[in-house]
Image (cartoon, rainbow, N blue to C red; front, top):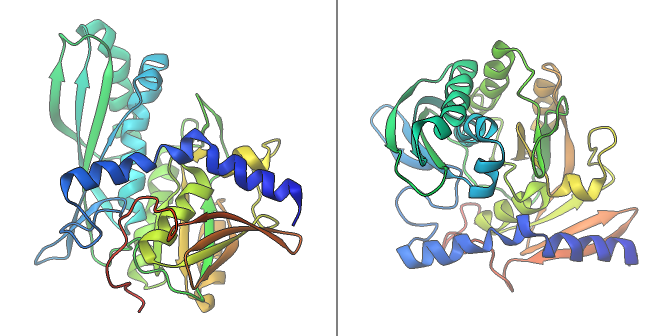
Length: 324
């Protein structure tokens, strides 16, 4: 095995963006939640069956240092990441609410403007929330409601599926490892790009998927593999970062538009083509396998990144895998 590949696997396993997700298992354990609980914890949004289809409900809380370093961008991200969660589930967002804490209204103003600007850009209304202008410091959480006809979950990946990535490279790093391709994009493009996911879902072309979150490609693949009770191989020779971005950084970066999708082999080319038509990079980057190991592959060599049977990550897989 290449020492360089083993080093990369070790570095990713130790990265704070990937290890931070381990706290989810502690929180869900305290709440008594599992992958079999109502709402399917472990997905990008809670999924609730209705007479017309499915309601989707998601929310995001933000790292205080991130909010305080760039309040306007934090407000924008509060909208953007929630809409990505709904799209990842094959849904369309219908409304947002915000929860803002600040010492006074003046300090909150840039954050509030970021929320308003993003809601306008994406065409999803802010319909209220909770505000405290007597807090010790600035902080933010945002929640979103959406709807889906044919939801895409994290639990339905099957051995033999192709693992695809679809990521918009037309951006730049803004704060930490956040790669943002949304700030300079026309509003109609932002809306149309998010609409790709529910359109693919409604055509029955997506088996499972997640949006690429703070854990990056590597951490998101691990979450998807564990939820689906499968293994995955990430082919590093197929993962193309944006120009001048090192592969290691890209593997733990948080793109503003990025999804991992588990699809049947016969659907892979058409799914990728749908993203390409809108200028979005999309390509097979690996395979879904039996077992519980997520491995890195490059030049015919492999290295173990994580074995979720030996070391649970979110601990939110279902008792009976959907593909069994």
